[in-house]
Image (cartoon, rainbow, N blue to C red):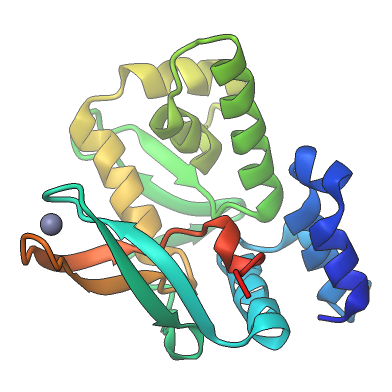
Length: 216
Ligand SMILES: [Zn+2]
């Protein structure tokens, strides 16, 4: 990161439109033939972590809410020690537009794909619009219908969206679990032990403003 990227991060217009992070990723990638919209979500996360480390160092101070008692804990994460989670595609059939799986309950044959940065942007936008209109936020159905490329050969988006709403939980969990297994990513889970109730376990590392706008 250079002063140019710092300008992007402090531009109020870009921040308001939620574009700062995308603009930053575009700016730090040297090879301009790469379109950041087409980066796999995990690759984009890796770029963000690397950019953060060059700009503000590897130590990230973040507040973590205990999933058991709800108290706030302070954690200091060394971003240089985050590990890469490899894609595990064993026993999966690779087809043209993704991976073919058969759902355990309905036996529907689903082709699903890995999400790219652009998909993530679209999902975030839809969620914001629904929030504004005070509609129910439905992250899990949105994510599922973005993952599914086709179901029994049907690619029509409306039909896929209505299928997702009717899928039995075991089938939708099967898709989510398989996706988590094959999705390459930076492992952003942390070992956590609560200072108030001594609850321990893995928690997701929250990406707060502190990630790119650390308190000095
Ligand atoms: Zn606790």
